[in-house]
Image 1 (cartoon, helix red, strand yellow):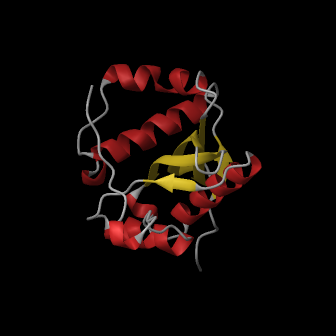
Image 2 (cartoon, helix red, strand yellow):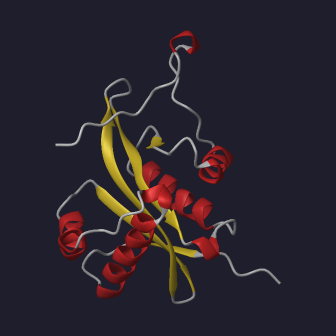
Amino acid sequence: MSAAPPVVRAVDYRDEAHRTALVALLQAYARDPMGGGVPLPDDVRSRLCDDLAALPAAASFIAWQGDAAVGLANTFESYSTFKARPLLNVHDLVVLPAHRARGVGQALLSACEAHARARGCCKLTLEVLSGNQRALRSYQRFGFAPYVLDPAEGEAVLMQKWL
């Protein structure tokens, strides 16, 4: 018999159970090689939920199996100048290892999409490491594809500069 599908709920950044679950899930992601393999600093863990609560563009979703928090998506609304509409970026997506390949990620992405549609967004975006084949397959199953305007010019490449 398979486990019941996860229940995904929007995070209330002021609710203590949600705060605890969000930080624990993000900490698990940070410690994973796909999250950098380095724990979150104490100051980040202590202020994260208050900072997110102060950002009107932030929305987070937790997947629950019973009383256990098993997955998290943190999103931020931005804007597409080419469409003159908002977009939603899935900034973090984590599923605890014991719950992978059980529909948790797809359920979280569905919650993100529903939120984006309710906000009038024109698209969902996300970034993923090219070596994270399991996540890539999951995102492709959900309908994500590389960002290409003109195939002759190639795919978009995410870059960063630490400040």
